[in-house]
Length: 576
Ligand code: AMP
Image (cartoon, rainbow, N blue to C red; front, side, top):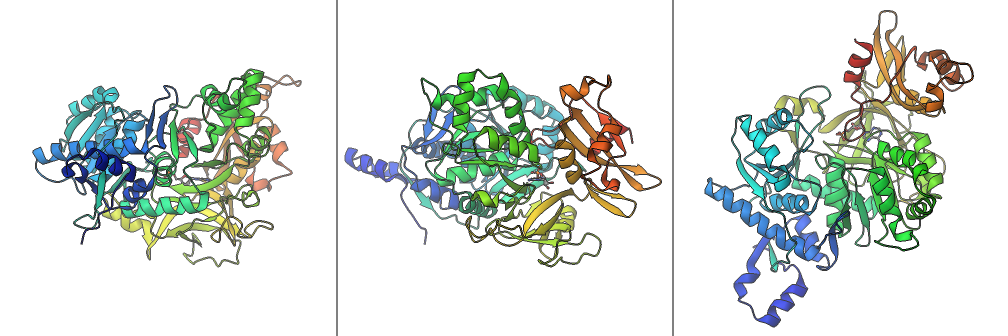
């Protein structure tokens, strides 16, 4: 029997008062986790805000627009024969209300939402559309030309193409929830960054998306009173799940501000605390380490009134939660942020496209331990496995091993790539390719952040393929060396890599960006060099961990999520 429940009770009452025909009530949405959650939100509360234009959209209008957009998609699909269930619907949209409506409309058709990065070159987009065999390509007006360019490349599977008009946020009819007629075939498809091979399409079913969001809601306590400042790209798990799906399920407000511009972000964070206040305080910030770094480098250039106001904006009493992830958080970044914000400690977490968020520090400040990504999140099972013997490392051991994960949050397959899917799992555990050690930390994990945050904490050592460097008989974690390099006042950025070496198998090498003082020769009349680096690291690292080579760059190339492609970097800088 199908379960019907009514969305937006206030609107139903309005409808009854106006005695409109009953048929208008019968728009339906699938009875799935995300739409059940939407049903319960106050229709008048804000779902999405465009930070610069200050246009805002309520949960009531979101539901109405999703129904209309879904109907439109299904009409287009029906014309070209058939249903959208389980089909990939790719879309190019700016970070905006239109993106959120489009994604939810695709979910409502039980299709697979495939967000494309507008920053990708057409060749890359063509690859993704061909590889995913997308049935439909949607573009907002802004990206219609880009989509046309891709179509002109000649796709293997010509998708139905549709340009979506800008949405005005008109309020909707009342909606009922209806069970799907078959088990859900919908979800999300995100492409890996493809550092080793061509990018793979990661299929995250609706059930996994729901499990990922539930896990985050329990750990980070998103709430309707949260206002999240959204600074991230939207073709990546961090920006989509942590910063759209989870807050929408919680009924929080999402304020889009993209592309990232540090001065604008400071203005926004400080706005409610200026002598003439405007805007609501931001309570929730989730970003990558480079974003926090750039904010802090820009801070001294702000005028003193804005400095004071934005410091207030990021203080613990206003900014409830500040999270860092997607790349290792250097200790100096964490420390500087805490001092600038008068006590707000960045909460670090570990995740990846295939698993959503997997391991996280806790809300309690004592559970945000330096260098650790915390404990397996609610619903996630984790184990460490010796990379040489394949044996599971006991909880009591501090040995390092590959992180393997299991649970409802894990993706189902690499699209059209059975071999890669099979190779990624061992006995039902997903092999992350990331190496970590685990140990109990005194004073942390007492359960104050939740029962899940107990026991040994995880410390990431890096990717098995590039960050675990084998030099002689020793293993070196690139991340550990990077942490030490970044603690030196002369080093602003660092990437540590392993280079082939006849003598050692691999030797440790560093690529660094120097501070202005260190780059422009100091008193000695020369700039900081490899000898200075080795001397500086002597007391904090064993000698085999100290880089044998050092190259200085003006900037280390990073992708939109602040990650360094080390294989490309080695080729470019060391020509090997
Ligand atoms: P992606 O699938 O693009 O999100 O990349 C996932 C990878 O990012 C992981 O496999 C890790 O190598 C890395 N990563 C994510 N979070 C962290 C973190 N907190 N510390 C270190 N590496 C991280």
